[in-house]
Image 1 (tube, rainbow, N blue to C red):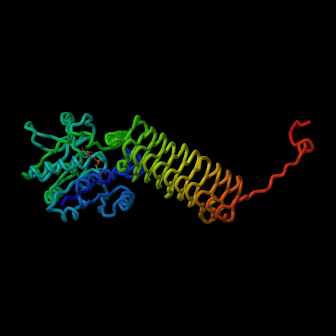
Image 2: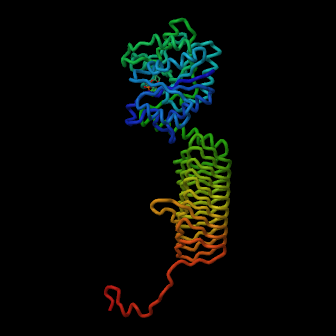
Image 3: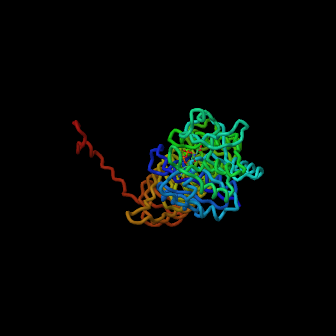
Length: 462
Ligand code: UD1
Ligand code: CA
């Protein structure tokens, strides 16, 4: 059985934030999410996360993301080796298994690399296999030290390295496969005899080699997979790489992105063929988009399902469903479990909240549809407002198929408009309207002839 330990106890001082480093975000998701996903994709069935600094934040996230993930608390935080020591019970339960250990701040590590390292680990009957890569910036890395024949010796942390060792450009990725029993042995022998007085997990390599065990390094061709983030600048680098990787993958699969400026798409988002994504468009969470849509510019979509042939121009769509052939925008907000059925047209400055809007219904401008059940082929005049909130309670409006809502109508919920009912412009509707009735709910117009000449209401009027 494959299992994994993810290190997430560090503070991340250089991020200059209150939150634990692993909660810093890449494309709007905490770094640790990517590590968990990669580990699961690689087949790990039992996962333990080491928490420490502000552990309640990480634990809260894990509980909401996957309640099966175990945690072990590291307090105080005395280094990566000390972090793993807190998972002794977990390791003991897996002492005959292969245990994967990864830093929680390396979101670009992927299942493919993890699996290739695993194959290397088992083929060579290693008790420890680490992942390494050749990097251009050697600042702050763990340098992989080998002898003149290329045989692994140990890992030297940058802070402990001699000037000569600092030139070694093979970097420890912070991703390791261990045999469970050997890991327990290594943990018993790690000391904090180094510049930082920390217990380094990396010392396991030298300890196990010293015991005469097989050890290896899987050199990863994709050096980006091993990058971590210690400060905001590096976090931005990771964001840019992740963004490029996701956009590239989508383009290869048939998504049309002529200009990637401002296009940020979450890793779990699915987009169909020939859908065009225009600049400054952010698509996140569990969003699925069909074929032949035009999304953007300046559009935000999260946790929503969008059909095919949909146009979303300058829209914000959250937690909602937009069916085939819908056309929204510019400047439209759709939220809170709304459903726009097939062929709906929503024009500028319209908000739809917690409502179902039936097939072919049109709301071309300046309208609020909240907590409403709207039928098919309804026409909303400009400036319609569903008055769904009385200061205490929210109640619903129901609008029947084919109804015509005149401009500047207020529908005071709860109220029901019948099928094909016709509401005169400027009405404030407080009572239900029967099917096919005309409803006029406004004061009658009075024209007073000659009133201006008589009253002289204007300044400077002679
Ligand atoms: C570590 C490695 C280094 C490697 C680099 C790759 C060690 C000693 N060094 O250095 O060889 O090149 O990763 O990115 O392992 N953490 C804890 N508890 C602690 C300290 C850290 O849980 O007491 C966690 C952090 O939250 C982080 C991970 O361990 O997710 C790595 O810690 P970090 O301090 O970033 O290690 P590096 O200095 O980057
Ligand atoms: Ca790090």
